Every structure is written in structure tokens, then in C-alpha cells.
Length: 185
Image 1 (cartoon, helix red, strand yellow):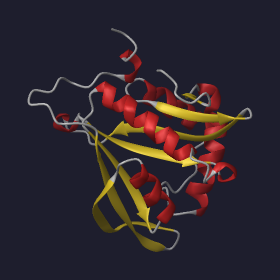
Image 2 (cartoon, one colour):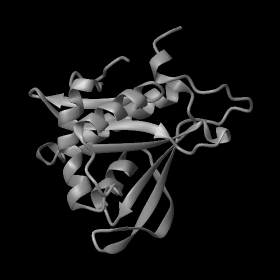
Image 3 (cartoon, one colour):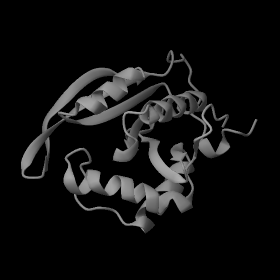
């Protein structure tokens, strides 16, 4: 991966404690994540390893701290969906509004495009103006809203779905390349 930003790199197992610390308040205190229990560091480490076999997981490191991260994942299980990915990004509150989320997403989208994916999707628990602005700033457009799709923190929540076209769908697409194989010819 050519890194256009010196602070941006591929996540490693050693990043799990910092990633868990960023993610925990989103799970515990907000409807932004629909997880209801904060995953432990071991679970985050497992998720990083499982994700990197097929999809990118990036971190932004600043001053020796992981300031944010973004990753792609399978959109749906059925094989015909294989050319689409879901994406997520989280930034530590101390580093928000500094362009880190956008930088992470721009590189993440460039990588999944090189892998051969055609569409990226993002689910956003609503309302969330900051997340909507971030996604739209990197090319996502609103697609639909799932009404009352989840119950968290004492009330029903809507989730909006945003779409980013990564390129023209080929008539005869090859299967996307695994992230782990991307650097290989």
C-alpha cells in the first residue's frame, strides 16, 4: 500500500487496545454502534486478523497514539454480493474535526477499488450529522433509511444507508482480490 499520509498505516494486532478504547464509548454511550456489549481487546485483535485476510483495516497514528481507524467488511453473505463492501470509520474525540476520518476513508476506498470492488455501503444510525457529512465528503450518497431497525439505549433507532460507486460495473467481473494478496502481481 502506498501511503499518501505518513500517519496512515495498516492495522496490526498491537493496535487492538487503542482501537478498543476508541470504540468502547461508541458502543457503551451512543446508538452509533448497534453492538450492545463492548468487545474486549482479544475480540478486537481477532477482528483485525480476520478482516485483514480479505479486507483493509487502516489506522491513523499521531504522536504515538491511534487517533482513528477505518475498515471494510463483507456486505452480504450470498456470493452474488461479492463485489460490494460495507465500511466503517471511528475517530477518537481528541482528534475529531481534523480531516482524519476523510483521509482514512479516501485511502480505504482507493484500496477496495484496487481490489476490484464496485460498491461501498455505510450504515449510519440516525440522526448523526457528523457521520453523514463525513461520508458525503468522500463521495457517498444517501440511499435509503431502515426505520426502527434497532433498539438501543431505550428507544427504536433508524439507520440510513449511504452508497459510494467505486467504478463502472464490468460486464464480466473477476472476483475481487483479497487484501492480503493485493501487493502480489
